Amino acid sequence: MATRLTGDFPVSQCKAPYNEESVAGLSIESCGLQGDADADSAEAPQNVRKNDLCRTGSAQPITISELEELQTEVDDSGLVYGSRFRGKGPPVDRSPLENLPALKDGTKLSEGDLVTFVGYLSEAHYMPKSASKGKKGGESVNCHKTEHEMADIHLALNSAPGRIKPKDPQHQAKFCKTISAEFIPHERPAVWNVDNLNLVTDAERPVRVTGQLFFDGSHEPCRDGTAATGDPQRVTVWEIHPVYTFEVCKSDDIKKCPASGKAAWQPLSNANGINVGDDEEDQ
Image (cartoon, rainbow, N blue to C red; front, side, top):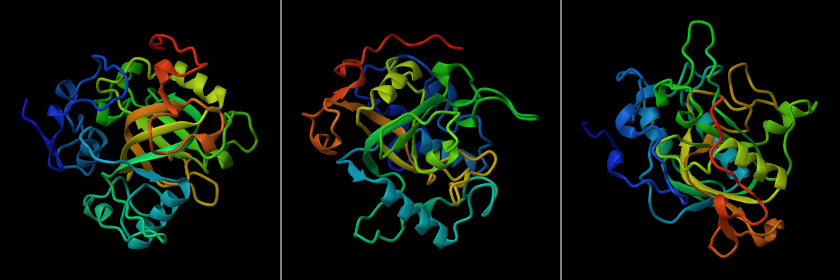
């Protein structure tokens, strides 16, 4: 298979950067970096970015407020994206996302940066497999595969602990304060499954999520605490995607869980007090 490039890296030749044992699942070779998106569409380069496992170097710590500020910079730039206010789907030219002004504190962030977030997991789910009228199930980035092991896992990350429950009257308002991260299926560790992630959510232990900073130009963020139909409920469409490493803090006290260093952190498979199991069966 011909290797497609993202940045300066041939992705199909990159070793998966996960901090857990990888498994044979969906592969770059079987689906391609662009998935099954039309090669001439704006979705194709966005899919290539979603599958980028090649970012290296020191990860930049990020906060939810910083990503909100970065979202404002994109909106102020006039970039056309999303489905409600600004356009239909991702931007054709993604280069402006790599040349945004520095944040107020001087931090410079761009799409493709390696970043890390420390906070709490509020919810995790496989991306929807059902098809809407006139559309396929699954996502083009994964060639519309719908089995759990071939679908992305979506994480809602928060600055406060606690599961956001479906029947909570403030359900949407609470989700609209979260940011997103996603595990892609390419060689994904079996221990990274929704059953195990649910244990982390309910344990209310701090997590550290490291991966690529990505702008999901297919959607809009929440506006005034409300998401448009078809858009995920989140405060910004900047997310960590794909996730490279997922860790659980040894302490319940987030003040003892720094963004840097290794001593406070454990991989999910070895996290104290969280009895993870094997990969769950597809449903």
